[in-house]
Length: 163
Image (cartoon, rainbow, N blue to C red; front, side):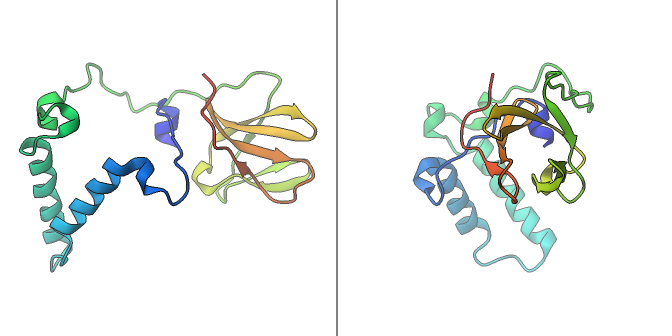
């Protein structure tokens, strides 16, 4: 949730479609093959393997997507430091605002509704869309919908956040 509050966008791929994110899947396949098969004898030894692989991947191996440059050559540190304080979530006045409890639930229309444990302690906004349907937002990210006739919780969204 921290990343969402900092403005990073979540993108959903189709279920069980690794080809939608082939480069990322390949990186995991190579990482596993080169560092975890067989696994190291101890946790510390395994961490050292991962660190060596990361350094090699970022400083030694050229990447096709970077014009055969190494990622380290393209990296630039941020010009400003993060304060550690997250921006407040502000919702329009006409929206219903609820705090998600530690079990990932809110009270809505006299019932407990599941939103997700990941949102525990956070404030979400509910926007009426008609027909007993409310959009559920976490900041600028559409989480999904709640329907008055549903006894269950959130129906997840699969579209881009509002801008």
